[in-house]
Structures are given as C-alpha cells and as structure tokens.
Length: 106
Length: 114
Image 1 (cartoon, each protein chain N blue to C red):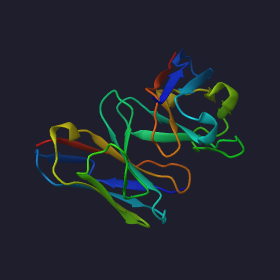
Image 2: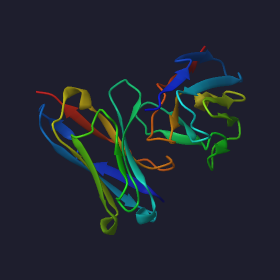
Image 3: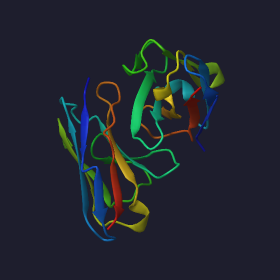
Image 4: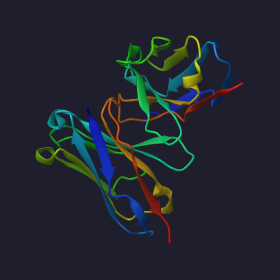
C-alpha cells in the first residue's frame, strides 16, 4: 500500500505569511494527488486535484505542485479564513490520506 | 445544488452491526464513483472504501476488509456501507463523498461502545 507522509504536523503562521506544506508518497503516484482543507466539525473541502489543478471557487492564493513522490501545497498570503487543518490524499491506488497539517495562529 | 446526506449512525456494542446510507441529489449519481472516508474523534482522515459507478470495482482499506461491505443503488441515488463485527476503533464520523472529493456529506457518527 502507498503511504503518505505530510509535514509539518503543525505550522504556526501569521496573516500575510507564505505557507508551504509538503506531502511525500512512498511510491510514485504520478499527479494523482488532492489537497483538502478541513475546519472543526465540518467535512473536508477540496482545494487542489491532480496535484496542481485549482478546484472551482477556491481562491488563487492556493496552489499545488509536484509529481511522482513529492508534492507541495502553498498558500501565497495566509488569510484569517485559512487557519484550518490540511490533508493530502493520493488516489493512484486506493485513497490514502496524509496525517494532516494544522495551520495555527502564531 | 449537490447534496450528500448520510444517515444510520448511532451507538452500537462491540461485535454489532450498522448500515449507513448516503442519499445523493443534485448530481447524476449513476455516473460517479463513490467513496467512504472516516475520522475518529480528534484524529485524521482515513479512507475506508471505494465503489465505481457500475459496482463492478470495489476496494477496501485493510482495516475494514472482511467486515465492511459497500454497495449502491443507482435507481435510488443511494450509497450504502454495511458495518459488521464492529470494534471500538471503528468509532468515527463516516463521510460519503464522490471519488475525487468534489462533493462530501456532513457525516454520520458511529460509536462502538459497551
């Protein structure tokens, strides 16, 4: 099975900061990777699919990159609404999630 | 507006069974592959199961294989998850979602406890 390793597990940042979250796959998954945002008590929200495609309605400050085994989610200028937990998910073989990255107020 | 509405969660004793349902509306359900994802209290997301549009391709996470069964009824726009031989570690909010993640339900809580 493909394992997904996300880092960091917690990230402290301020409004306006550039934020980067990394996800590594144990095997190549091409670009079959999605990024989600989740807030407490809510379902996950799709941000990025196919590693770098922005889901409709998602602000352009979110971007994704990578292929193979290394992937990155970047928030170019962190906004108050962006404090949340972020997950990567590979969907090349089944649907493994990373363990999550909580973006908290510095 | 697309809606996925889960139901069927509740409190069940270890070894017991539950059947979760997911009612879909606002999308052409029969064309979508679907998935179940769960989240234990205070923990991360865990993929549980996948079923394609025609029900001829089905996958399960190792943690539920042999105990959970996914199915769908395209005529009723519904997805199901039969949970058998439940364990304490199956306690979680269970979400149904379209494969690819564009649409998610609000989740239904399953609590396994004596």
